[in-house]
Image (tube, rainbow, N blue to C red; front, side):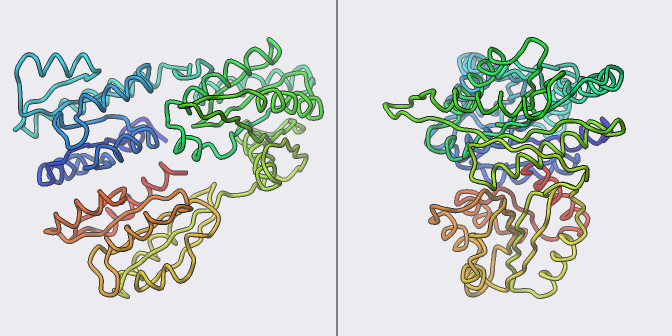
Length: 438
């Protein structure tokens, strides 16, 4: 992916309860090619921020239940070391309000009503600075271990050295068990504390020549030069045993954490770094499927690997729209994912199918206004499901359905598109949402 393409895929989150203003701003940002997630509920918006890691945050200073300054304070406590531009919008432009914004972590302050052209230029400048920063940083700011960018640089060097010396080279991918549940139950601050402590625990427990990287969310990769897969499996099992005995506390509740791991020893001089990582990931999938809290080795010479399952559900009473959406999803090319696509003509048939019980991450797209069961009723029923899977929800709305959009965002929709829209535009939106969740 070129730097220009990465720039176009940057994600902006808007937290705004003024719906007409939110809709206009979202539309203007999307016309620039950026992906936009809009939130009207401050509580849900904070969870969205931690889950999606946006590249820029725009929020209103005055919000119901929790103001923009309180949200910024929470974010600063959670990941103040990360460089994510934060822009405060406020109808008050007095000195005290501006100082409060900057004291709580805002990078910019815009008075409402604002000039949209000026705001877009400011956002563009912030995103350019973030892009330059991200390209230069090799250390993960939360855990203080190397990041995914450096992994690809370093692993290629290690493979060249391995070919030269003919020593062993093994990699292991570690992924926490039920980490999304831990985040939801104990909060993202506790989740971050666990990740940070785990990274330091690993660094202190491995050899000086071994290297640990945080490659995504709650997933780490460790590179073990001069060690075979059996030796590495023994090491990881020891780490699993030691770490699972650690006790974490949140509001008087004590809990422990386990992880699963996949181990792969390089065997072929022609194997690229990307394939080695895929093989370790395949071993990790075996460990998860075998019951979690375990370590699995993979010795296959085939480069095929288990794809992650994405369950896609379409709900629309219009057969033409269902057919169009089916074609869009069927045309998606996702190398690491296996797609299960099914369309339903109404919400009752969707819920009767027990579709939400299927294994994998879920993506749901539906029409906002439908007979039998409308979009809001679908969202409310999903919200009542305590065992609902990890999912992203896209609602298709009429151009004048502002109240429906507001209610949909409140009840759990992650994004919306207003009609009329082009198939190309809809496909691009779907692709970006899926890429962010996988």
